[in-house]
Image (cartoon, helix red, strand yellow):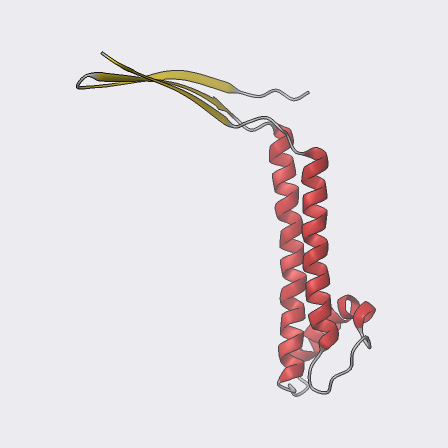
Length: 136
């Protein structure tokens, strides 16, 4: 079990005829929760990069871009990601395979991050506040 830093303090707010006592317990995130958060962010980063390249490919096919080094680079970079979906639906001038790939890779990233968080995320609270109001 990983250590968790905890800080506790009491705040007292007084006014005309009332007082409020607030006990605040703050917990610093554990190493485990930081690691889960960072890995989740990394998964989303990779998914965003893949979807961005696929979006470029979709637009280039849509506008019927002329062969150029950038266009060839985008096609060669995106081919491995579109290949499993190529030929599912054919439509002239629209790269349906790239659209399907964008949806599938986004859903796959969401499922992977959700599963990862369910399996490895901490379940403790980060902040707990108890407030007691009383009249004088």
